[in-house]
Length: 520
Image (cartoon, rainbow, N blue to C red; front, side, top):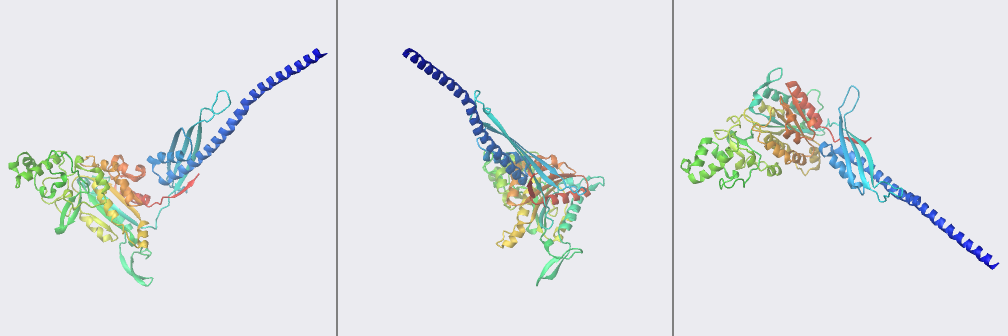
């Protein structure tokens, strides 16, 4: 009996061992789905959260790039939003596509600018196993958002506008089917636009207990607001001009020049030369003096040093102009662009009796000159008697035009006066009939170093527009990179009616608010 009892106990023990082994196997098998479910729960929650963050960041990015509306920078800006909000990104693939819907009054379609942001981010999974069910080693997440900006036109706001106008010799050519002279049509267009912006007649009226100047025009409400509009005028050829005492005209530059360029040529730099003094010498006179001291005027030794520097400037190109690329300090020219340099020795020479240079136009002082911002239409009358002659250096016009526009800022301690100015529309309209002549790369160099961007920084709300007069200004890289949107801010025209129409169109574009931005 004892032996049977022992055998029974042994059988029970073996059975228990077998059951424990089976249980262990089942537990091991059950761990796989349990671990898988755990991994999926943790990782899945993580990816749900990150997807939500990605979509939120895409919405923020879409709003931001739409408000900014700078197509070249949109992708970079949107990427920053995504990468600063979404965590643990392995890589980012993002697009920011712009679409402009023009207004269609016939169908009631409003103008809007739209940006669509599509973002895809790649992440390393925390749990990745070929044995246990889990996410792939890398997982892609996606988010998409769309925002629109509906511009609002500030028809009731005042405007400061400066016309930077090409007065080079080619503006004397005829154009269009009418065969009008281009410079005559330019004058007509500026007069037509200015007559709409400024009061044609002004009177005094007793308003709110005091005498005020108001517009005296049929159909005009005598509010006086139109008197706050101002127009400036900056004509250019190879340089701009300033009239000084004695009705003397100077061909003036707003560039800065290098002090340390080719010091082996002469101990005197470009900035040391009295260009106004040397303007009466011919190119041959300068070269003979540079080559042989005996051919120099007194003091011979000093003048030879100056002549050597001038000779090197002349030999930089074959156009006999004072502004040559290698001598221009482009970065300093941009950083100091709002400092008027027209009175500095390296930056002017008188036009009368000038033999050393050409392309500055007529030696007659009255050819053209700048007109400061003014609310008086009569102040623009001198434009009618100005004429075109010389080369083309739009960068000089842009630099001086920016200064003239900037000078309109009262910088007033009167908060109301300053606020009125800050709300003003500020516009720089460049009108040109051809590429730079000489095309020496200075325009592009200045634009590449931020000339136009700095103008927009210093003049808040500044709008820069370009009109090519019988010239494809839209194809010139300097202009393309100067404006915010080359497709909208550069317009090529071929006749007077189109010129006036497109100037008005650019003014309308420049008078838009930043717009009302909405997500869709």
